[in-house]
Amino acid sequence: MSDLGTSPAGSATDTLTVTGLHKTFTLHLLGGRRLPALVDVSLSVAPGELVAVLGASGSGKSTLLKCLSRTYLPSGGSARYRSARYGPVDLVSAPDQLMVALRGGEIAVVSQFLHAVPRTPADLVVAEPLLRNGMDRTAARDRARGLLARLLLPEALHDGYPSTFSGGERQRVNLARAMATTPRLLLLDEPTSALDPVTREAAKALIRESVAGGAAAIGVFHDLSTVEELASRALLIERGRVAAEGKPAEIVTVLNG
Amino acid sequence: MTLLAVRGLTKRYGGRVACTDVSFEVYPGEVLGIVGESGSGKSTVLQCIYLETMADNGSITLDGEELTTVDAMRRRWLRSFRMGMVHQDAARGLDLGVSAGGNIAERLLAADWRHAGRIRARGTELLSRVEVAADRVDDLASAYSGGMRQRLQLAKAMANEPPLLLLDEPTSSLDVHVQAAILDLVKELHAQTGVAMVVVSHDLGVIRLLAQRTLVMYRGRVVESGITEQVLEDPQDAYTQLLVASSL
Image 1 (cartoon, helix red, strand yellow):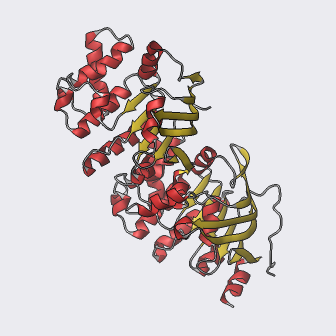
Image 2 (tube, rainbow over the protein chains, first blue to last red):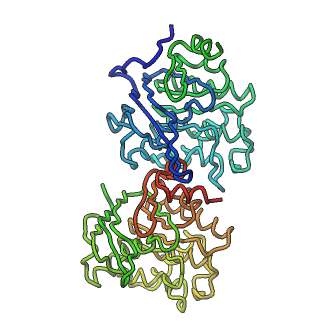
Image 3 (cartoon, rainbow over the protein chains, first blue to last red):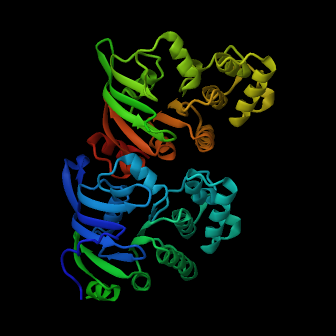
């Protein structure tokens, strides 16, 4: 049954434990108007688990992911992440340079829209995090091309510029880049929204494999069948709060009802 | 693990305050952006670090060494071995009346290179790294185009492989396609050498492309700092919100 209200406190083995996360935007250009986007969000994700976040548009799903990746600065609460390299880290208050380091390897962000780096070929965009982590150029490029091939990006595009790609092609570059470093925490914001059914299956297989390999994932997906296929649990967010939590099928029913 | 630490840096020109109480760190291998409009004090901060102008207050340490109190000889050494600078106006970073090779040789001579043939070979190698053809080594710097001058400044700044590179509006006076080529080159140099950089620019596009972390300066003060993506997507300060909302 769905557990209304707050989620259970995380266990010691969880990869991520979010407690009382909130985010209010202050719009100085509009006379300091305050816009509460997340009011109180708690959740936990264990290794090998994908938690789907559901909710109407504007409910705070993307804001939650962006607060966890520090693309947005959270207003309060905590997000305890167990880093392989740095030990326990609170993603809400970690120093900027630590967040930069985590995002370059352990934490992967797949956003809806890739801000394409100009004049950088697709395989290099994907290989870049590997190169920064010290992998040699040939090995990094091979791994990058392997990932792009798995996502069915035509080989002729591997050295093309993503800034000239279609939405679906860019999205695959984006996903391949995120998966390149074998991340421990995946933050997925509609990672398959622009893909056709065939490439979407390839993308889902890659995500499933990463989670089966021990990654913890939080995902927002626009189609509910993907949620039921990939997620082990789901949360329903309403007006910046967790309104329900449970099995994906249950939450989908709550959402549709 | 801090490479550069700036603490409480303040500089006045006469009665006018150029920068006040500026503090930040740069870690080895990272690219820090400083963004702000003209007159915000961002170039003054770089000039203080490069010891072109003396800070009135505050401390600047590079690998633990206090820079604000060094003598002229030590300053010359630091600028040859510990940091390089690329100016917006190439005339400030280059001797335009001297050949490209000669400009680089100056840095190598400071590093006690004495053998003319080796200096020439090293100069050609450095220029090839910034994609300047070998047959242009003997041309006067004044005969170089704007983009080529910036390449030459980069080669000169990197001549003795310093751990810190300071870039002051490196592409602001260039045509758009030349600007793109120079930015690509800076990225490539960073990827190859791992040199830490402080990039000052009024252009959010330059900052987005190059910097992992960013400081925003307004009227001489740091009003905001954060991961570059956060500063651009969720700016906190009223001025930064205006800056981001105003950019194309």
